[in-house]
Length: 168
Image 1: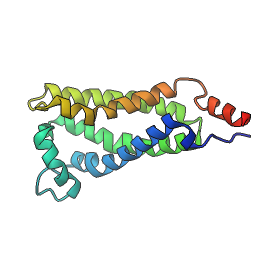
Image 2: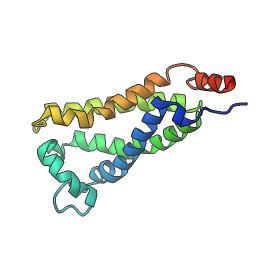
Image 3: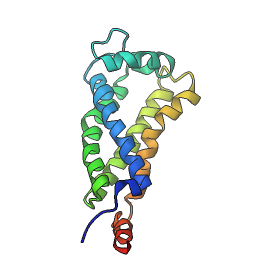
Image 4: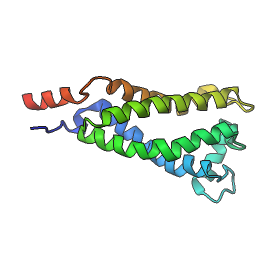
């Protein structure tokens, strides 16, 4: 029988699922609208980008007048990474082995995308004025995909969970 261990008994997977659900929301509410041309402004027609304005002024000024490299990373986030996360979340919850390849591709792409995002942020004309505040809010989008990639490196990432269930 190929039953999977409950997600609540797999803390790393549960943490990834929670983070990726938040990432999906952020991708659709913030990244995608910004990528297609909605401005981060106090009078933005898109309410989530209005709420992002104060953060942008204080920590990420490049969002106020985004360079093309930032638009590229938000396009990639909104149109590619965010939809893929639906499948990854489902696969993690249900212990589906087919997410291994998708997760490894996603992890590599997401880490690369965040590298480009950080380069744009720190080397661009408007670096964050307070990196000690900026980094804790942005590093998770680099760290979580890296953890997922490490989690999926083995040929059968859910084998241990199935073995535990068989012993119970």
